[in-house]
Length: 379
Picture 1 (tube, helix red, strand yellow):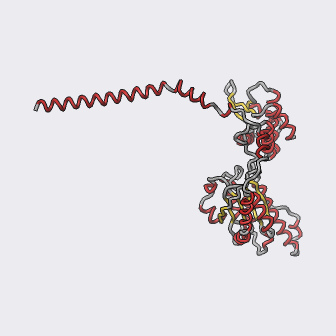
Picture 2: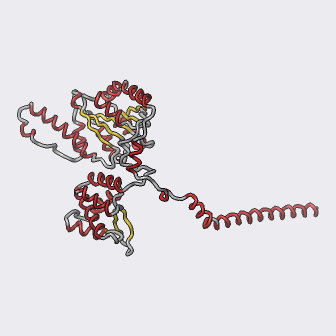
Picture 3: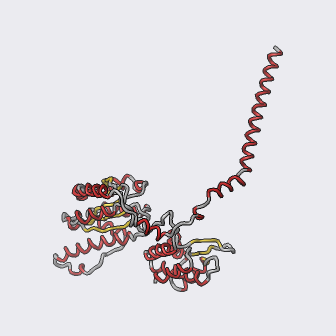
């Protein structure tokens, strides 16, 4: 029995030695990997380089070159567009039945929807919303619809005696809930009284938030309002819940790939292979600023004038901006200023950095020449 026990002990000792050897090898491997990044990763980064190191062409030049590229498969694309025209009558029938039309598929659908509206929706009052723009004043659009129905109501009241005092009154409220309640009360058998919202890119950056989608969904379920929209983002259906899809929008989905270039929709998006020239950056900033309130524009002007007068400084302290805006009666509180700054930051008009003394400073990411040109065009 002794030899058998000795063999067992020998086997056990050899097994433990193997485990210790493997553990030692593993430790050595990970220790070597910990030391490697200091040299290996630097070499990898140097070999890979950065996008900023590339000599990129100016965006205006690149867009001009893209415009010169001849289109391909023109006959096939035109045949595809003609095939969609055959469906116009079905689309109109579904609209009159209370459904909303949602177009999806590769290619710009702007020309297709506008052709459908101009040739088939002649009995409707068509209101176009360009969702691909950086910002959309949705409340103003809905107020316009309400005022149009209010004018129709006044025209009907004109035929009735004793209602002269109500004819000169404007729309009674600008509250969103009041507008929706008013729109839901509008009923008529006359097709000419119906409004069609034609929304290019309902999934666009200006309409992608939950509040805008809820607003459009409530408008779409009003009796006299119909919606025709397009989407291009792959995750667009995630914008809506089951109630919005089946009860409010009542989408009827149509796959209509047009293979048309997104020329208009991509104007406000920088090209990946372009070096975002100052002219294009200034143009984009001007479009965004013009969509903001006059007070917000004036706050931006105060910041820009300070930056031009103090080019060597790291930026304008938030407290200094608040003091100057308060002196000019542009803001009444810090909360108001913060709301303007949030809009600026969301549109990349302003960058925030820490000053050497620790306080937040604001800086507009434009060179002096571009900033001066922007202020001139904004005036």
